[in-house]
Image 1 (cartoon, each protein chain N blue to C red):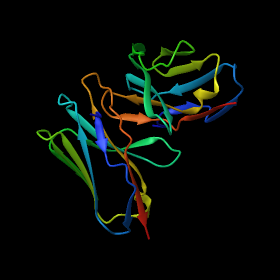
Image 2: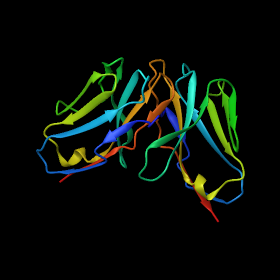
Image 3: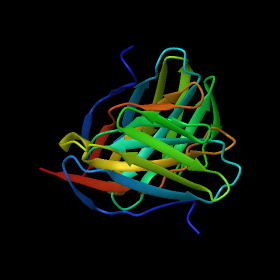
Length: 111
Length: 109
């Protein structure tokens, strides 16, 4: 198995632009998690899905953030409009259901 | 009280030595526990799962004390490649992982 796949690996964008992060979970896993990591706040859970349904989005910072999982093999995290404080590494992880396996992350820089 | 408490370190340890990390957790309902390692600028990687009193995998041994809400990780014959941050991660009843800041380990030649 290729593991969890994320794209892009790096994204540099200007404040106000829309950013879309993509994730392909491990085949057969029915849980998908989106995390954000910064030096100041550590690893934070943003939202997670079970069988493509959002279960808990209480970690999503504000309405500028949205996440979708249209099918079992694909999820997106969108930020619109982006702000400099959104700069972080965004990880996607999948599980079935206990052990979570992480993708390589997307390093987002908003200038 | 924090949900997960670990000594942030860094632990500076000579190559070949044995090192132990300790972790306490506050959620007494947690049934599953994990140790992850994270290298600088990389994703967390699952090192070991702990469902009963402990687990052993090669040079790595984890022990769980539910009464004291305490988990430990022992690394024997440490290698330079063991340098990383080690995260003790309990799971709650909703399959969510409870993340702390971890312990930084530096193995010196």
